[in-house]
Image (cartoon, rainbow, N blue to C red; front, top):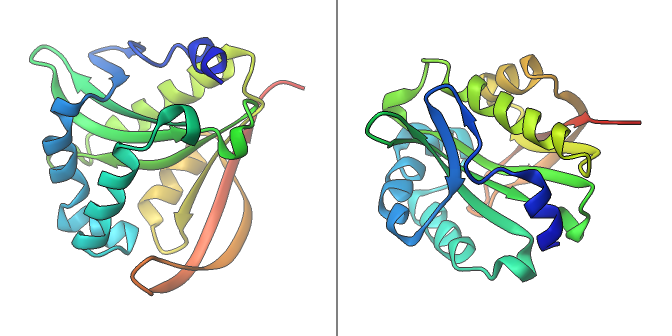
Length: 181
């Protein structure tokens, strides 16, 4: 699995003034503020308490066991954090990469960062030669996320009922993009 992560070259990937890097312990307070922002919670359907517990649990999960990696996106020149995301190989399948969480900091929304970051992720995943499918889940009610993903080449492949950890129910969409043959 480590070889597959190394093939992706996400750590240090750049797009103009944006740089993607593996998150560190020092990033956790700022990541928590992004994830726990009321506007982020509306999109996820989680309570602040549930979101914080889930993030802290996943933050400290052993990467070798979970296949999960946490990333932040920095903006030059001051290397201000503009986004947080999680990538995972579900079922430890190195051909299938999932964006399991994506959050642009509230102060940077509506400025095109989301589209640029998704474009960078798609480019690097396709370039790796090892990922054949890149997927994401989102709530069917999250129109902004659906627009972002579909305009970035993802197609809706599944719609299903879903229940969040706090008991809210909604429909969840699975969107996917295939690479290679």
